[in-house]
Length: 413
Image 1 (cartoon, rainbow, N blue to C red):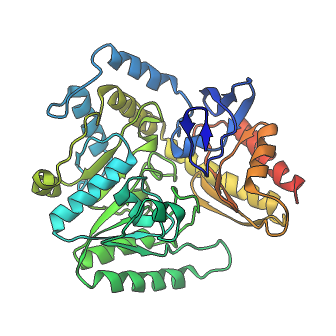
Image 2 (tube, helix red, strand yellow):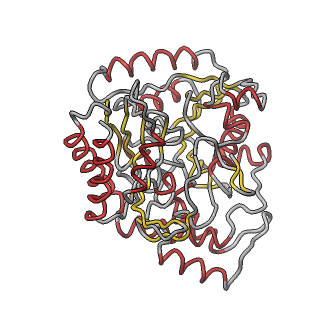
């Protein structure tokens, strides 16, 4: 859709102009104040316009604002060291990217260059970015976008993500069947890498959660068949799942990890692909990691301060605590609500699955009603919400947002 001269994604219906934002709040163009339950889709994890990050940006802007790709700067080196100190020993060098899709495509290029193999395994209805190579990981061939831009899916294999409901599915059986399917693909010997997230889908909107042991099992079987593991931490990273990074949930060390979104708390565009020195030294000449604006010094200053705040304040602890609180409260309040069929998630990444069949009701209508009452929501699909408040939200404000959400659903049930 078009709003003036700006093109919008069809699924993210335009509702208002964001005039300002601070902490867990945003304001529309009319001055209406809203509690934000989206974090800009896992971007402003530390709250909107964090003052320390703004200060770091201003400080760096007075020093230098650009570094060409054939050079580097002390702020870039400082950030690389800081990020490496938070990651496993297998992830110690970084490509300089402007966002998540660039990082994911760079990881695919590097995996192919390192293994000499073409095929990439991913999961249907996940999201790793909007460039061709990233879309083919997860967009189904029958989707309009897939047909209209002529995605070929050559050398991409899509599996069904092993999502579970909170009550009525046997997690062990789901995981066992999935691992059999994955092994049947990998044993052919032509796969370069598997691309996945850390046990939960954050990007497409299904917010499906995998059985416990999913990521560790994937890591074990990829090692068995000499396949590389690309872990997309764009949505799961920076304390969202109750750990600084999603890979810590099952103590897995991937061959590649990609980061963006919350990496700079939304202050400026930046992303990165992390890998080992062994892989980087073997493929840099073949895969050509380059970006004109990758790791702009101001963006790096924002990312460095963001990482420092996460570590200093141990934000992931609050995310785990509040995530459990949100799910327990919503389950208590909505357990008998006929609209709600499931509540599941990890940390402060929570799915509310709805049954709107025959009710002349839509998620868009529920979003509009919540907006009227002071809560900003975004739908994850036509039958679910993805609840993602800023991780630094105060308990009082969180309770107010939960109350509005519950009242909104009850008013239509």
